[in-house]
Amino acid sequence: DSGVTQTPKHLITATGQRVTLRCSPRSGDLSVYWYQQSLDQGLQFLIQYYNGEERAKGNILERFSAQQFPDLHSELNLSSLELGDSALYFCASSSSGRASTGELFFGEGSRLTVL
Amino acid sequence: AQSVTQLGSHVSVSEGALVLLRCNYSSSVPPYLFWYVQYPNQGLQLLLKYTSAATLVKGINGFEAEFKKSETSFHLTKPSAHMSDAAEYFCAVSDSGGGADGLTFGKGTHLIIQP
Image (cartoon, rainbow over all chains, first blue to last red; front, side, top):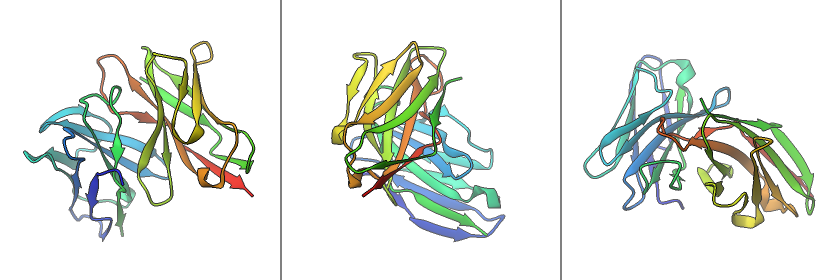
């Protein structure tokens, strides 16, 4: 158990819909990272938050957005969903503000299926 | 831009045999390099990381990796494979400079252990 909690574990929805994925980081971790894992693209870094502020942005689509709340949990919002958005979405947390200096602890992921 | 290439999407070894998983990196600045393991239906877990302190890095579960700058490689090895090592292994790189700071992962190598 990494200590990172993601909900829901599975989600099935239709094209054009909007979903919210939630992540609770390990106790005390200030950084939250979001990754998308798909068969064709592999693991893609989406975005990082540190103590409520956006720290780094990767390959995140404009239809996607995220935020980190004062209690440090984070939400990833995916809108106008397309079939290609079907993937496993991972959240990871770290005590460090930089992925290079800290260990990332991953949740078990939220599997999104868009029909 | 930084990147990693993992040679071989699938590697099969016999139980007790040497495990060798290959990773080559590309980075314009001195890199931080990582190996993560993903067991079925779980999130990623850090095996080991290189942060320039020593070229031979020892990790958990008997794994180690050697940083070779001349070959731009960071291959993962284990002297004797165990059935419990069957999993997906990911090599990752992080920019040690001031760039965007999410880890960049390779496509992964699925390790199969034959009894």
